Length: 115
Image 1 (cartoon, helix red, strand yellow):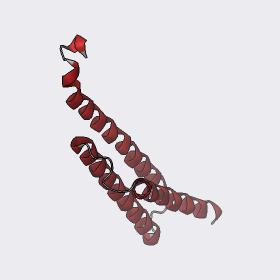
Image 2 (image 1 turned 180 degrees about the vertical axis):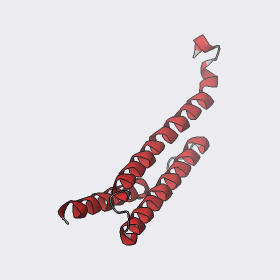
Image 3 (image 1 turned 135 degrees about the vertical axis):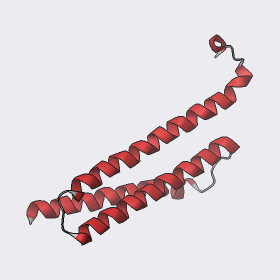
């Protein structure tokens, strides 16, 4: 950072900002990939309101999990907190909705394939 005219004591805020940017990119990746998976299943069920409801509910769950995890992690980074929530529960906040969305989409696609 000395090449940028910053002393080593000034790098703390810059590193926090970089960490937050990387967090947002990572979480955006989860969200975009699940939107694509849901979209692929969505177009296979143009007239099924049950399938579309399941897909909408799953993408809302994924969005909520991503937003909650992003907000909590951002708070931890900015306030130098170890963990707002215990780590095992924290992992489930983001992982379970993403897993459920992929499971619902995959099961719907398998159903469409066989029937």
